[in-house]
Length: 113
Ligand code: 5GP
Ligand code: ZN
Image (tube, rainbow, N blue to C red; front, side, top):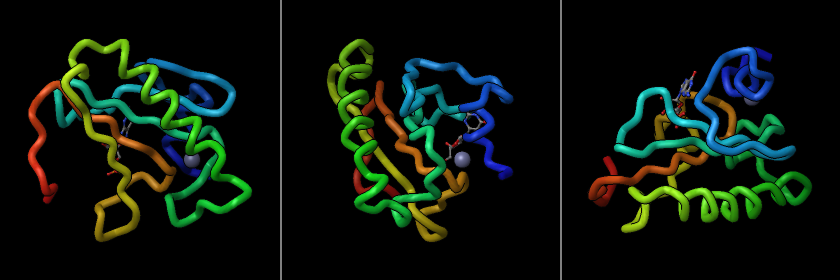
């Protein structure tokens, strides 16, 4: 399967990795939209939130627990951060492997565009 995030998981493409375990990978976004911008992905290829179900969604609680742990160790995130997942065309999802953006280190406007 031609998935760039699966290639990052397999170390076929380099990435700046912040955290890794058997279920998930956390790495810096290549084109950061904020002083801190990293991505959290399940190692299982799930295309988007639309593909989550009772059999594969346990990883989501793990992802949020690790976002909390990793964020606590990043000083720039102590005043807050945003977690975003784009799902489908209208949300401008470009990589079809489920990922959560974590953005912080500056004041973030709301609502998003
Ligand atoms: P999406 O638009 O699908 O929600 O976000 C995809 C994100 O993946 C973008 O923020 C983009 O900068 C990031 N990205 C795309 N290709 C690569 C890559 O090869 N390495 C890294 N580290 N990030 C990537
Ligand atoms: Zn993938």
